[in-house]
Length: 226
Image (cartoon, rainbow, N blue to C red; front, side):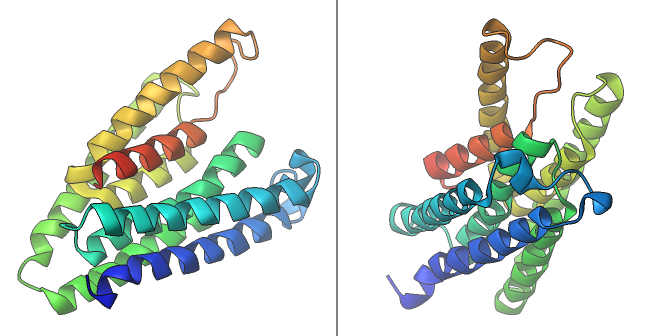
């Protein structure tokens, strides 16, 4: 195994640091610029700091897992997965606590995708277009399905969820997106049933989709490497 193969671990560490900084900036936004501060919703900034450290360690650990156990995947392939995870874990907290997914995380995901695309184009310009096509198809299908779901079922999915799904399509492509969506739907179903049975939520209440989306993606990438 060459040094290049370990680059996704370094990228994961850096990307998670950027995401934590972005999450803290979102917490410090004045109330007139957006919803109530996240740190007020969580009671203090300390739980958010602990969450950030745990998720940083978990995401770096996942990157090491992918490098060690999915050796057939290229470094750039793995890099897309860990960059996606790095922008998703802050979303789980913001969506759970304030029912919002800040645009900054979708923007970061898009920036990472363009950077990796540029490197892929430089390394292997002949093969890149089939990869990009698969990623654009996955992105388009998810966008269409999400908008139809939003139109047909009121309150089922928010615009933040739709943006996040689009980034997932770009980063995972047609190879990896279906496993992530399947795991997400399974987790979302059981969480919704649990909340309804325990009467913590009613059928009229909004149940944040972001945490299930994040957990489903983590599980899918760890279990399949895709």
